[in-house]
View: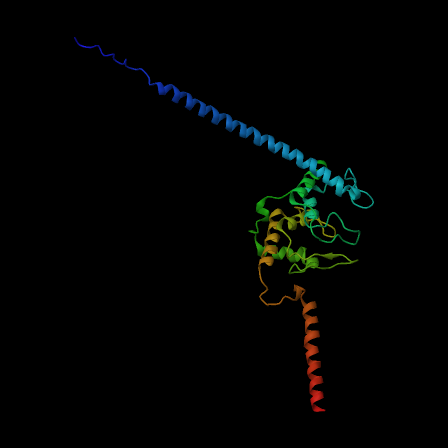
Length: 266
């Protein structure tokens, strides 16, 4: 008698199929949840960071700047009001060490920076939030890819009478001076033109367009990267230093030779 063999019905799934489906479902659900959580966390962190930056800037301002500029940035007899200066002026003054001011004088000198970049940005964000003013330009303005030849002409017309044709700086009246531009960053070049720090006039877009400012920055960066073709620059002060060099060493050498010849003849 033939033995009955149990036959497997068609369409019956393997025991592993259910486990595989459950695993795939868990992976998909977990991936979607992780992605959504990361997006929410990133948004939250950005919001918190912005709020913290402004609050930190307020605390830094109150601790280091309010003595002269007032708690409400309205100014005091020792410092001007900051209404309308904006974060760009804050960056210029603090990133060059001019502020906080070390002592009263004809001009705030450049000195070692006392704050980190984050702290400077925080103070700038705080000032911008309560006394809006000029803000940071686009990266294109600072890229140094403008027309350096056109920028050189604009610089000679508008800036060279104070900063020297070669950007070496120069003396002004009453103990003031125009600083050298050899180590100035592109951002601070732009900030100086827009905010007009200390004795410098403000070059708004009606005086110098954004593209013209870019050209001037490109020219100054060209000067910073270009070695003097004549060798020793003598400070790039033109006939003043050159005439002094000739007077001291040239005429001095002639006098020394004359004395030597006279001594030999005697």
